[in-house]
Image 1 (tube, rainbow, N blue to C red):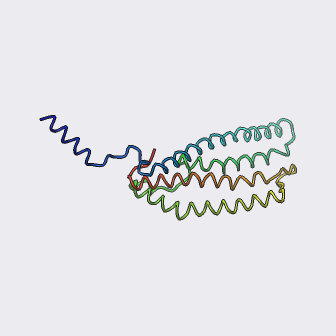
Image 2: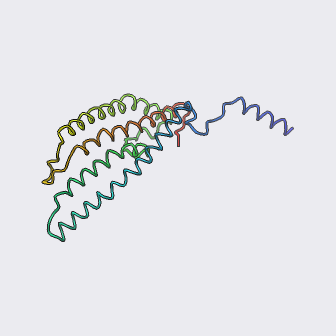
Image 3: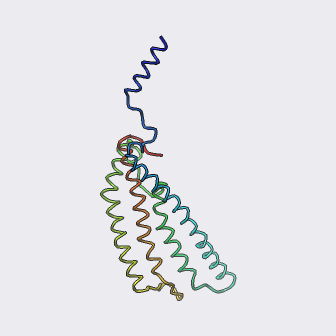
Length: 199
């Protein structure tokens, strides 16, 4: 009797499609590979970019010590600090998206079922995110190319360091954010299909 019930349960289980252990399995294998490759690249990039905080903090501390205890300010600290902070902000944007740390107003969103959340994300990526990132990439590239052609210098301090490498950060950061956006879009598509968010 017990064996018959076990066999019947196994037959029923074979008829019912198994729940996907990983919601990404709802995507074709090639797209799953794309998601994993982008996420891995973004993770490594974010960890690398995070090291920009070390020279930024050193620059700020050196300026404070020089100003307060040695009686004179540096001509370079302000430029170094804002360029490093701006670079960190832009280059880590994709990493922040991967970790879902960007600010979002989710008063309603958090209460919705996963499929509704994912559908809203899919539409937001298609209608807002991708066009905005394409615009930033386009305009940022124009601005960076123009800055390199002029060999633009900073006017923020008497030091006047080259500004064109810093201007290049905008299109590079936009490209990194756009790349991670593709991964997040594909995860949202998988969540629409499965009703579960990928881990």
